[in-house]
Length: 115
Length: 116
Figure 1 (cartoon, each protein chain N blue to C red):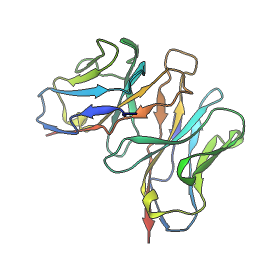
Figure 2 (cartoon, rainbow over the protein chains, first blue to last red):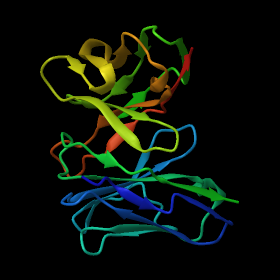
Figure 3 (cartoon, chains in turn blue, red):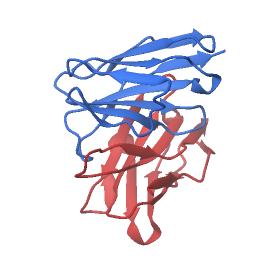
């Protein structure tokens, strides 16, 4: 079974530029998550989708971050414009359901460096 | 508010020695608790989880964890550490069970180094 795929693996941009990350979840998984992991911290949920609807985006900085999951499968996370403090690893995860007792499988992440 | 505390930022153990990583949580109801491991450049891999029942939970790679409600703790243990166990370990609590979201709240992680 293929895992959660993310691209690119690494990205370096200048502040005020825009960037987009892509995630392909495990086939059949209805729930998709984007987490932000800043160096020295644990991952923090940015947004959770159930199929193509948003379940939780309470910690998404909506003035600069956006995410979509148009067909309930792949998802993109965009930052525009980027700030230095956005430097982090962006992890995508998926699970078949949204109950807490269903395991979330994580991708390898995209490491973003904003200079 | 739910939170997870991992008091040890960095731990070094000798190969073959026992290991215990500490985790304390704050949660209003019965928590769903998890331990994840993250190797360099890799995503998070689930080691084990506690939902209910037996408070001693067995996981993969020879790890186990014990849920102690009275101490609000969920410490991770391994009787004999291997060099390949060197990684960062994250404790997490599942928030919002049965509600609209099942997001995970993570601790800050413990970086494990293994000496030969």
